Image (cartoon, rainbow, N blue to C red; front, side, top):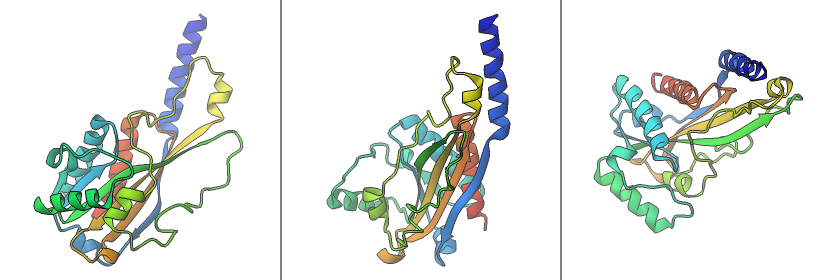
Length: 227
């Protein structure tokens, strides 16, 4: 009976979390060059050390971009040997950019996990996004700047609240997990101080699964390309 009660609790929690997941575009910015940049060949890069997660995000976004008649291709298909690495040298990044150019890549859409925030029963003060690119006034960021020094967390298949069946119901319901994902858009054909053409930050609270995060995030990002 005790085991049955635990199963019932988990089922109820699953229903609650699925119905209560909230998603919002919390921060957005685009330059005057964005409309032109999105008409160029776009390379979609999902920053993840997990190849399967990278493929899932890139494939989802590429598929939706193509539905909008945008010439997009995933990084894992075009550059299968390209791997995430911290503290790349400028020479390494310059080589990567040259490889992009050789394949006719003109614009880049990068996605990454920006942060994870867990709130207990007393909500913390709303995040002001003080660390975002836009609020720090870093509009001149080039692709090489972001790819090398911008602080991000990697996308993973574990992006969802992890509940232990031995936890008390009350403690489970009094916590909330918010994932902040971002998409950054660059036009490599422009001068360095103008390459950064778009920034979109999405907050997803209490998703039921990693798949739900991917679906909701990609839907919001694609809406920005429909404008």
